[in-house]
Image (cartoon, rainbow, N blue to C red; front, top):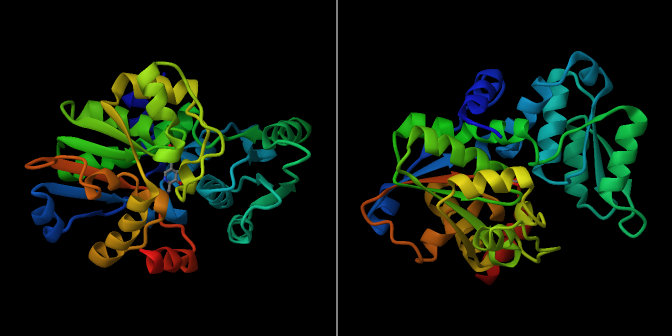
Length: 318
Ligand SMILES: *Cc1c(COP(=O)(O)O)cnc(C)c1O
């Protein structure tokens, strides 16, 4: 089990390598929603997402011989870029296994940070089996995107900073894919702001943690169709789900339309680019389904990696 001492240790370990990202607010939004809203802007983190926190924490906890042999992951998203960059900074070789139909932009970004990309054919093998085979053959340490105490502890440092910077909160909204960020955030919130309600948010199509939360057993949703590409993971893990069950007050799901609205409103009002997955946390408020009158509300903005042409296309239809 991960407790707050893991997050404090992770924070000491990584703080000279990660940005203490800004907390932004808008007087206009505070008036519109009758509340005080605090946005923790991890879209400004190194590599454009909070994943750099967990990745850096993991790289810094390898033994000397593990560092020399290198690490491997099989995620094509923000975790791959974060791990590639953390490896580059700390002199650890990073191998990333990706499907051969992964977006060229993601492959290029990972290679740009010095990662070695190994492509596989989806019809012939799975990333897990290829990843396990390569890790075994080459003696690489597998660093998964969420299912690991080092990753959960690293991700928990963002909300630790948020509450240290703005004080206690009444409600905290956090996006959830595999639940690494949500579980780490919930531990920090319980410790630093014990009366704060922690609310996890998923896309409607990929609401596996919402279902698991209701049923009490780990459920999965395979290949959900949603523009929230950082939250397409089929399920949480035993580790993240047990922490979520213990600390999270509520799970919500939101339609993709609200995420598009979020990207637009972040650009207009806070003058920042947020990827659709990063808009999950604000979506229940924008969609008008939450009453936050008079509350102090924290919102974790998770990432800003989105193809601008794609964003322009979303906006032209909305
Ligand atoms: C990975 C990611 C998430 C989800 O994080 P989990 O730890 O998998 O729940 C949310 N937003 C962005 C931008 C991400 O990259």
